[in-house]
Each structure stands twice: as structure tokens, then as C-alpha cells.
Length: 312
Image (cartoon, rainbow, N blue to C red; front, side, top):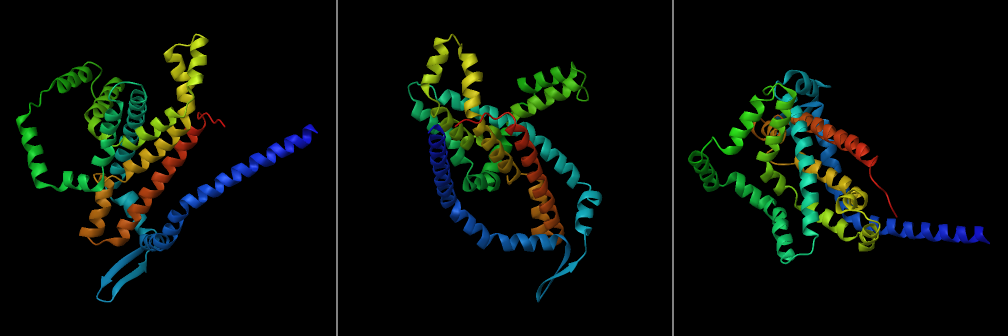
């Protein structure tokens, strides 16, 4: 009799999991159809171009197979691409970590009960609106905005408190080449990029906030009755319960960083394709960039998944 109950319970659980999986596939079905219809063929053409020399004529494009010449040029001949790739990966790592930490603690603040909480949440969600394609285009392409930025930079004093403090700390910790100097230099780079971090954290704040609101208040009440402090509750309850969302936010942050329009490699790929009309070489650069991005996502996701707390 107990075995029959266990089998029925397992069958019911598998049935519920199967229905949820079906609902999930139905939800992403429009994306799958759109990807197959609109993306598979261009991706195949781009991969073909990356192994070819593209000749443009009045009759259209002619693809002359040249094996791995474009990839050899990108990795061994081009003096800029490897440097840009290393700088991009380094910047992505510390800026993504800063974005996740900033988003998590802002979500913690917005999850508290205080007057004007709805207004505060709306203000932080403005980062999502302001980072949309139209306003980003205005920010980078508007002549008036560019002139205004130059005027502010010319009128401002370069010897700010932050600059002076950075020079003092770096000079007293072995210079830029020292380990401590590099740590402080990276720290100040994060501080200088706080605007970019805040602009890139809107979606992550919403994801963390939804996860925090799903944590049962009874868990904190039980922990408080057992004598846990707020700091202990943070690391024993809050962080483990939202850790699966940290993996989601991490992947989203990496993809978002690699796709930014002000990325040096994205600019180089765009210049090779649009200005120099070198479609084969630009395709090879794009595929190398894509593979590196996927490897980073896979490696970091594997590491983070080891510390993620999975619960039913």
C-alpha cells in the first residue's frame, strides 16, 4: 500500500512537471519559430562568409573559399583584435560583478517597507527605459548632447577628489604595476563607471525583486525566533533563496554587455562590414566574438551553478 501511494505521488509529480514544461515550450514557441524562419539562414550565410573571400560585383556577391585565412588574420595578424578581446573580457568580468552586486542590494532596499516605495521602484526602473535603443541612440548620436558633454568636461576641474585619492592610493601601493595598485585602479574604474552600471541594472533589479517577494516571511520569523541576526538571515535565507536568479541575471548581464553599441569589438566588426565592405573578415570577427561569449557564459554558468541552492 505505501508503494502504491509513492507511485501515485511520483506520477502526479511527473504529470505536473510535464504540464509545466509544455506550458513553457508554448510560451517560447513564437521565439523558436521566429529564430528558425528569420535567423537560421543568415547565420549559415555568415558562417560561410567567414571562411570565404567575398567579392562584390554588379552581379552580387561571389564567395571564394579561402579556408581559415580570415580567422588567421584575426588571431595572428590583426594587431588590435586580440587586445580588444582581452580588454573586453576583463571589463565584462568586473563590470558584470559590479552590476549583479549593485542590482541585488538595490532590490533589497526596494523590497523594504517605507513611504514612497512605489515611486522609488519607478525611478530605478527608469534605467530600463533610458537604456532603450532610441534614447541610447540620442545619447551617442545627438550633436547637442555631445557638445554639452564636451562643455561640461572642459568646465570641470580634472583634479577632483576622486582623482587625487586615486593617485595617492596608487602611488602609495606600489604604483600601477603593483598588485595593490592594480586592485585600486580596477576599483576606481568601477566607481567611474557607476553610471553605466546603474543603466545596465534595471532588468536585474526587477528579477531580484520578484525573487525576494517570493520568499515566505515565515522563514524570517522562524529565524528571528531562533536568534538569527539580520546579517545571518541575509546569508542563510535570502542569498540561497535568490541564488538561482543570480545565474539568470549573470547570463543576461554578460549578453547585454557584449551586445552594447559602444563596445570596441562591435565597432570594429561594424567598420569592417559597413565602411571597408570586408564581409568575410567581419564575419570571422563576429563568429570568434560569438564563440568567446558562449564559452564565457558556459564556463561561468558552470561555476555559479555549483553554488546555486536548488529548492522545490
